[in-house]
Image (cartoon, rainbow, N blue to C red; front, side, top):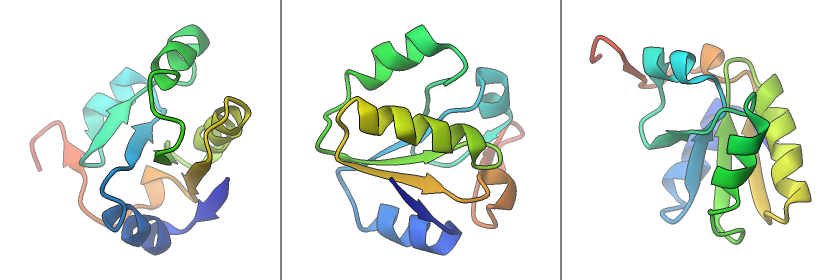
Length: 107
Protein backbone atom coordinates (compact mmCIF):
# COMPACT_ATOMS: atom_id res chain seq x y z
CA UNK A 1 0.00 0.00 0.00
CA UNK A 2 1.13 3.49 -0.80
CA UNK A 3 -0.36 6.40 1.11
CA UNK A 4 -0.75 9.52 -1.00
CA UNK A 5 -1.88 13.07 -0.38
CA UNK A 6 -4.71 14.51 -2.46
CA UNK A 7 -2.53 15.89 -5.27
CA UNK A 8 -0.42 12.74 -5.62
CA UNK A 9 -3.48 10.49 -5.46
CA UNK A 10 -5.48 12.54 -7.98
CA UNK A 11 -2.58 12.96 -10.42
CA UNK A 12 -1.79 9.25 -10.34
CA UNK A 13 -5.46 8.28 -10.70
CA UNK A 14 -5.86 10.55 -13.74
CA UNK A 15 -2.83 8.92 -15.37
CA UNK A 16 -4.09 5.38 -14.68
CA UNK A 17 -6.97 4.78 -17.12
CA UNK A 18 -7.53 1.13 -16.19
CA UNK A 19 -7.62 1.71 -12.45
CA UNK A 20 -10.48 1.27 -9.99
CA UNK A 21 -11.55 3.83 -7.36
CA UNK A 22 -13.30 2.44 -4.29
CA UNK A 23 -15.17 4.45 -1.67
CA UNK A 24 -15.31 2.23 1.43
CA UNK A 25 -17.72 4.41 3.42
CA UNK A 26 -21.32 3.46 4.15
CA UNK A 27 -23.91 3.76 1.40
CA UNK A 28 -25.53 6.69 3.25
CA UNK A 29 -22.19 8.53 3.34
CA UNK A 30 -21.57 7.74 -0.32
CA UNK A 31 -25.03 8.95 -1.36
CA UNK A 32 -24.36 12.29 0.36
CA UNK A 33 -21.18 12.96 -1.63
CA UNK A 34 -18.55 10.98 -3.50
CA UNK A 35 -15.66 11.33 -5.92
CA UNK A 36 -16.51 11.01 -9.59
CA UNK A 37 -15.64 7.57 -10.93
CA UNK A 38 -15.79 5.83 -7.56
CA UNK A 39 -17.67 2.67 -6.67
CA UNK A 40 -19.07 2.22 -3.18
CA UNK A 41 -18.02 -0.98 -1.42
CA UNK A 42 -18.73 -0.60 2.31
CA UNK A 43 -15.92 -2.09 4.39
CA UNK A 44 -18.23 -2.25 7.40
CA UNK A 45 -20.17 -5.06 5.72
CA UNK A 46 -17.27 -7.55 5.50
CA UNK A 47 -19.03 -10.32 3.55
CA UNK A 48 -20.23 -7.90 0.84
CA UNK A 49 -16.87 -6.14 0.79
CA UNK A 50 -14.98 -9.38 0.19
CA UNK A 51 -17.46 -10.62 -2.44
CA UNK A 52 -17.33 -7.36 -4.39
CA UNK A 53 -13.57 -6.77 -4.29
CA UNK A 54 -12.83 -10.36 -5.29
CA UNK A 55 -14.52 -9.65 -8.65
CA UNK A 56 -11.93 -6.94 -9.42
CA UNK A 57 -8.80 -7.80 -11.42
CA UNK A 58 -5.98 -7.98 -8.86
CA UNK A 59 -3.51 -6.50 -11.38
CA UNK A 60 -5.42 -3.21 -11.66
CA UNK A 61 -4.32 -0.19 -9.69
CA UNK A 62 -6.78 0.33 -6.83
CA UNK A 63 -7.42 3.79 -5.35
CA UNK A 64 -9.23 3.70 -2.01
CA UNK A 65 -10.76 6.46 0.10
CA UNK A 66 -13.15 6.96 3.01
CA UNK A 67 -14.08 9.91 5.22
CA UNK A 68 -10.74 10.47 6.96
CA UNK A 69 -8.35 7.78 5.73
CA UNK A 70 -8.72 5.20 8.53
CA UNK A 71 -11.26 2.80 6.98
CA UNK A 72 -9.53 3.09 3.62
CA UNK A 73 -6.20 2.25 5.27
CA UNK A 74 -7.76 -0.93 6.69
CA UNK A 75 -9.34 -1.71 3.32
CA UNK A 76 -5.97 -1.34 1.60
CA UNK A 77 -4.41 -3.79 4.05
CA UNK A 78 -7.18 -6.31 3.29
CA UNK A 79 -6.79 -5.79 -0.46
CA UNK A 80 -3.06 -6.49 -0.17
CA UNK A 81 -3.78 -9.67 1.80
CA UNK A 82 -6.17 -10.72 -0.98
CA UNK A 83 -3.37 -10.37 -3.53
CA UNK A 84 -3.97 -6.94 -5.05
CA UNK A 85 -0.63 -5.71 -6.40
CA UNK A 86 -0.99 -1.92 -6.42
CA UNK A 87 -3.14 -0.21 -3.79
CA UNK A 88 -3.26 3.51 -2.94
CA UNK A 89 -4.82 5.07 0.16
CA UNK A 90 -5.97 8.70 0.19
CA UNK A 91 -4.49 10.38 3.27
CA UNK A 92 -7.18 12.41 5.05
CA UNK A 93 -9.98 10.92 2.96
CA UNK A 94 -12.78 12.86 1.33
CA UNK A 95 -12.94 15.23 4.32
CA UNK A 96 -9.60 16.71 3.18
CA UNK A 97 -10.49 16.68 -0.52
CA UNK A 98 -10.46 20.13 -2.09
CA UNK A 99 -11.28 19.00 -5.62
CA UNK A 100 -14.59 18.24 -7.26
CA UNK A 101 -17.08 15.99 -5.49
CA UNK A 102 -20.49 14.79 -6.60
CA UNK A 103 -23.07 15.68 -3.97
CA UNK A 104 -26.70 14.74 -3.44
CA UNK A 105 -27.81 18.19 -4.56
CA UNK A 106 -25.98 17.64 -7.86
CA UNK A 107 -23.03 19.97 -7.31
